[in-house]
Structure formats: C-alpha cells, structure tokens
Length: 415
Image (cartoon, rainbow, N blue to C red; front, side, top):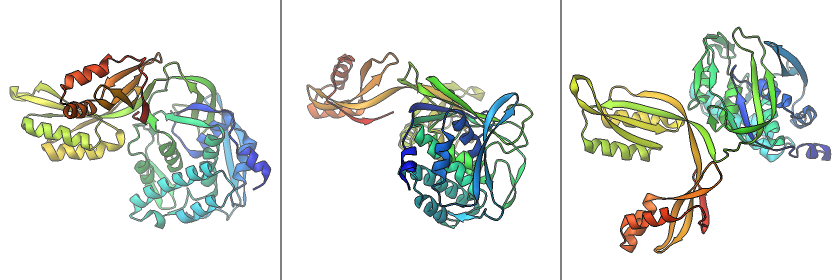
C-alpha cells in the first residue's frame, strides 16, 4: 500500500449524525450513490477499492432522474467470467489481505458475517458452509466495502434510518425463484421496523439489509439535527408511486442533543384468569429477559369480568423471546405487538459521596443542557439497609442535590 493510498484513507470532514431516508427501500449501490452525492470523494473511493485484491472490474459514476429528481448512480462493470461464488473465509481473507484501514476491514467483515449467519439460518448450514452467489460477486463486495469506506472517511458517528418498505412477488436468484423479501433479507430484518408497499419489486436487497443492520442502531423518525449536507442515491428502475431514490442527510446534533429518538416494541394482552402472584412473577421474569418497562392496568372484560391488561415495552430484537415468556407464564391466547417511537433523555449512572458512603445515582441531561440527579432505587435500598437508615431519607438526600452537584466520577453510560 503506497503513501498516497494511506493519506486518502485518513478521515475527512466529520458528521455526528447521518439519517438514511429509505422511502423506496435500500440497496448497496443506492447507499453508496447517496454518500457520493452528499460529498464522499469519488477518487478517494476508487483508490480505496483498488486496494482490494480483485481484478476485472471498473466503477463508473453517473446521474439519473427519478420523478424529476437527480440522483447519483454508482455502477460496477465486471468482465465476463470474473463473477464467482465465494465462501465467508474467502471474503474475509480477501478483505484482510487488502491495504484498507483496519476500521474499514472490521466493518466490512462484520457485514459479511451477518449475511453468512442469515444465509446459514435459511439454508440449514453453518456460516462457514455458506457460499455467497450474488453478494459474493465483485459488485456486491465493492458496494459493501465502499459504504464502509464512506462512513470511515466522512467520520460519521451515529446513523439513524427510517422504517424499511418492502415489496412483494418473486425474485430470481442462484438458488432459484424466491419470494420477496428474500428469505435471507427477512432474517436480517428481524427487529427492524418494516412496512408493506404492495409494489411487485425487491425494494430491500440482502446487501442493503445487512449494511443497515450493522450500522443503524435506531430506526424511526428523523432525529433532531442540523443538516449540513444531503445526497440522493438512485435505484435501478422507475417505481410507479414514488421516486426510486435513497436520501441521506448529514450533519450535527440539533439543539435538543440530550433527547434521542428510538423505536420500541409494545406488547399487550388482556388477562382475567391469573392470580396476582402469577402477575408479580411475570413482571420479574420479563425484566430479567430484557423488558424496558412492564405495567398492569385494571380493565373490565366481557361478561363484566375484572381483569388486567399487561403492557410490556421492549427493544424490537427481544420481541420473540418476551412473547414466549408471556405465553408460557400466563397461557394467554394472543398478544398484540406494535412498534412506536419514543424520545428519551440522556442518562448515566454516576458515583457520589453521601453521608452514608459512596452510592450510585442517575444523572439526567435535560434538553437545555442542565443536569439533575435522580435516586437509583437499588443503590439507595442497599445503602439504607447497610446503614440502618430509612430508605426515604436516602432517596430524599439524592433528590435534594441539584444539577450543580459535582459527581465523584462517571462509572458507565446507561443510555
């Protein structure tokens, strides 16, 4: 790897936030086109891709209109006979042998590992036995590595995305004709908010699904941000009801930087045939399994039966396991599942010196930038028992501290 290549892998302008507006779906080439349209230097990308030990291909940049909007289209032309199926080990060796920055290698390999795990689950294999056909081809490798190069070069800190729209119908693959979304794509989208469109096209490709699954931690509405750049990546075809484009917004955190947005799952069921002891046990079990919150609401059901509505808020990727807990513990016959957006304040657990010794409290950052401290129940209870002091006295002491209180140290993020 020469000195020029090294210098071009250095990070350029930094963006703390990127938002992927995937109203027409997502694919590797659409993502890469959007980043280039938003300012990723094409020469930097070409130089980085040339470091891969691949031959017989060239990449070209063009612009195409979709519903009157100009988008950037990146095309990878491969010589006939060069495309081949590759296993996970081959791709990892190929990327590892390149002169790319270690961060780019790590991201690229992680994305292919996600793809291998999804393909293995669908076909009843181990990830090491999977042979990639479409996604192991040169153009898919270039797309995945190119997106990782873009995220690295533009120094993007956090990536958000909209829910992903899905088409219907069938698509031809090396395995034959598959339903849309492709089985591996659907496996990758577990825990990701999706919505049907009725369009007879593959709107989300396996490559696109794997890239967003790796980089995007929060799916939902556009976050509070100051937009500095935007870009449009063009898809291959025209769609009848929307521009076939992917839009990326780049910028910094907005004025409400203490407030983040995320998608959570809500599980609900009505129960009229379990005892309070069972409900108490259910709550404990759900929290142990990763639920964010559990609530019981008194309701009136058919035949005038008093009952309880169980509400569980959870990370989307834990829906299946938490649904199983509810079914097993209550024998309810149905559970409603929905995905909603929520806004949360930044918080962290810190250690403070109290009259009874060191203790953990929760520091909350408000939208105006000020901080408040809230008691952490378990820490307060532990200290109260140890000091033989009323719990309320310990909790009141923490609450009396205002945002001017200087903590001893920050132990860990609890965001």
